[in-house]
Image 1 (cartoon, rainbow, N blue to C red):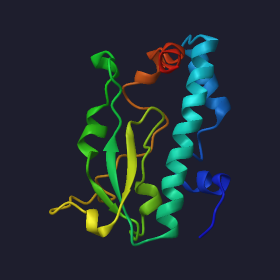
Image 2: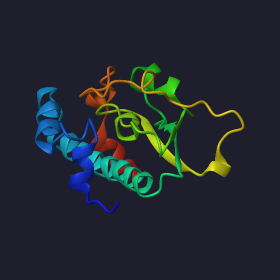
Image 3: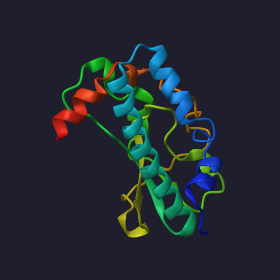
Image 4: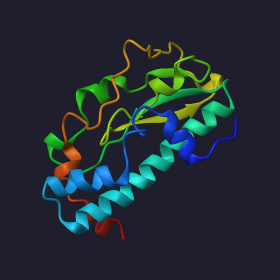
Length: 161
């Protein structure tokens, strides 16, 4: 199944509602500086592209699996760390053949630290813990912690240079 990013975005429960304009307004509403808004938007576009790449791969090959990993950002305050919902999903497995695959894939919200890592059957843990639709978090607009609203995005990008 060959699909472009716009089509894939329209399949994912979060990306269908998440436009650049919505994100921009949300950041401005929380008094983010224009530098932070621009840096955050760059980060979101890279984040979304990575998730769409994972979606594309598992839609093209249903013999694969998605293992949920959690991104951790070094040197941040405790209130900006991954939420317990994300942490509890760490290492859970979703078979690409699952009929509800798209609705179970991360990200689950803007600011979600969950990411799908593609693995093969040979890479499955000895006792895999499979994610079920019932255990899957609802895709909501924003992470309950709101950590990304206060994160110094422009500063973090200048440190990477």
